[in-house]
Length: 206
Image 1 (cartoon, helix red, strand yellow):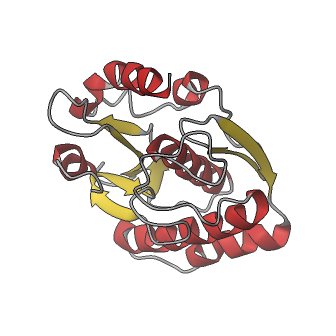
Image 2 (tube, one colour):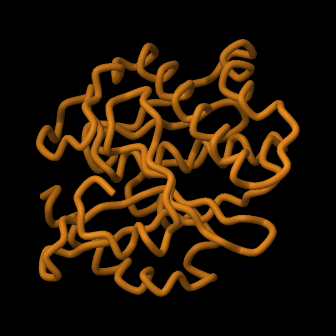
């Protein structure tokens, strides 16, 4: 059933390789497709168990929000510095969430384990990272980026394993970047890669 669900998603997402602006600018359909919810206030709805099989609400304390946003408090001269800071925010977010809901042992690149509440596949990761970025955006923490629609690549038939990632778009210049938190273990830095290169990659992890 999970495989069918993933294939259905990727069929619908096949047009994303062209990075159409309309497809990359909204998020509601992504959440709706997996019965998940976007963040609300200081609360995120964390997907885990593969394909958002489980969705657990996590309300952050003021102290936790300070920890997550701390890397973004500096004055950045450009989007590259902000992306590096956002990678650290992703790490802090995953560490806090891991302690709260038991996903601290989540293994990077894990492709087998559906139903295990402690593990996440790429759909969980793409959703959760997008939720983090939407939370940060709502708090005015993003100065050089806008949160875009998550993107999927691969469909078995083209020789690539299906994979998904969160996406940020630069507010100046429009360059889009994959922020992929799935390849490494919980709390490790996400892979940050230009979206066109991420889409063209034939590797499972990047």
